Length: 314
Ligand code: SF4
Image 1 (spheres, helix red, strand yellow):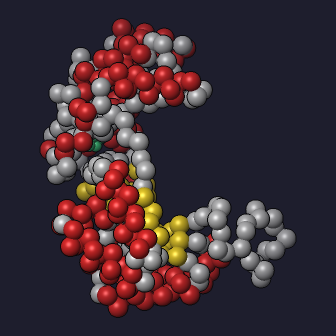
Image 2 (image 1 turned 180 degrees about the vertical axis):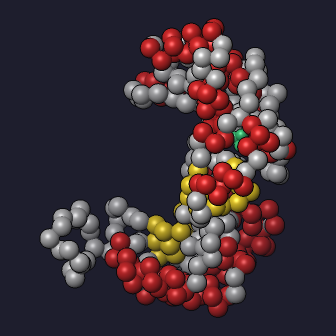
Image 3 (image 1 turned 90 degrees about the vertical axis):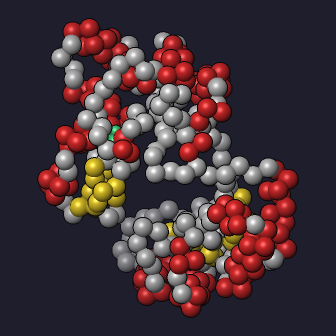
């Protein structure tokens, strides 16, 4: 930026827009709404650094068409391209006509990119390519999401998990923390998540592998994951703060956002969550809740404490 304040302070050099490297994408309406005035403010002050604006979760489909168009126009004014973000996986469930109408409307309204996301569904490669072609034929850029998901539901075997651990070890990673993508009672696509009765099979093997690889889960939490003991949860040991404030009661469950840690602390019935009484806690064995318990329980049981000492000095 030529008229930047504090020009004598060095910043990293970037190519001028449109850039091909070092792309910065910002989020459109996501947890909070975004209107054209907000976006214009952002771009007026920081537009130089922004290459792309991405909507989230189909938020555009809830807004007046005029308001969506105004956001897109504001972005284009600052040479910022606009992506739909991941939503087509929802549209796909509504049938081929809905997909065509969706692509046409994206074109009409002024989107530049349609993301072909597949975080929640599996699309056969042939169908995926046809979808990319469809988007390109409409004159838009397709942005296919490619992800590798390990440990999803019962479909991933303990052997595959072992392969992953070996592969990561061969890359020289400093440590691996394995945590189950657990089944969460409010989810509808629950077949991709691990249920509590599936976890022990996977984690018994992980516990064996921990003797040979840099798996940094504590031995006590591995026992818990392997189904050999119970642990209470200590969500207050790993709290989450995001742009909306302190998120309570834990990283996973959102009962509210609070301005201060004190407010969150006072508003939360920690005993209720410690004892996993909430229905959403039923299958949870996430490290953020349970590794804290392991640390807090240190010294209460001689054998466990000895195992922890060995774990720390290993
Ligand atoms: S059990 Fe899981 S979901 Fe429940 S409070 Fe603990 S970390 Fe959060």
